[in-house]
Length: 362
Image (cartoon, rainbow, N blue to C red; front, side, top):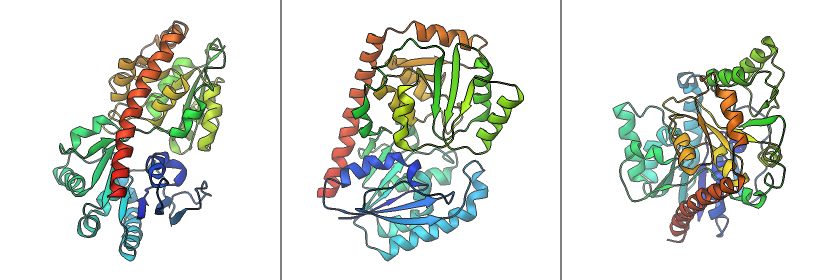
């Protein structure tokens, strides 16, 4: 089978594509990947069996979408040309926006021959956009959501599955943190991923600033938000907050080994309130408690599963509450909670994987 995965960013920033690649590698498939190199830097390596198609155009992520229209238009032209030049048996659209940009081509030439990976809530409040999304879903052979909270934006159909942003290879490193002592001073709070949401991060920084009980570490791409946070720390002479820059996916194992609490907090805006971050699954796999925002879908799941601390960083007692939480954890109970939640997730993951295998073999 000749398969095209349509990505909307750099390879390093699409770990969710492994969910699909893991299934495609099981058969003798011809796999193609379209990706968008947005910063001009070197990409991470993929197995030679994947044929790469690079769309190269500089584009910052932390700018309004209206300022991205020119690059979106050029991306659409490039992707459409690839779709029309080749006759793919299956297409995987790995983000909502490329699906929208290519909706006419997908409907006309690839109806019931594409998988839609729905992972972005942007303009669903507009009727025409919502109608377009519904059409994309109905014309797909299967649709995957990265969070069950996204289902409210989609039609009710029996071929919508939950993929989860879990990296299966990480299961080989489950005990990397559990084998280390939990009694550590200071408590290391760690964030990894694209650094964004300036306001809530400034609040968190203020709450733990120069508190000898804590260190706060940031790993990831640094654009406007990260630069502003670094200047903020310098201006206020905060010496227990650290920025380590961009990292490779495999380096997460080193982070996990040296982390007491995962910083998994985002603003409760329309886009992030229903989302599930990759770090949620890292916390489960590596047995690390995570810090989540009150009122978020992910926070509700953390509370239900008893795998982390749900709070509001605006509370003056934030640091004391977090310190007391960490030191009151029953680690044997916590490990059981992580195992139980992970079992449920892997069960759903398997259902989705089986669906992909059925599509390939049909």
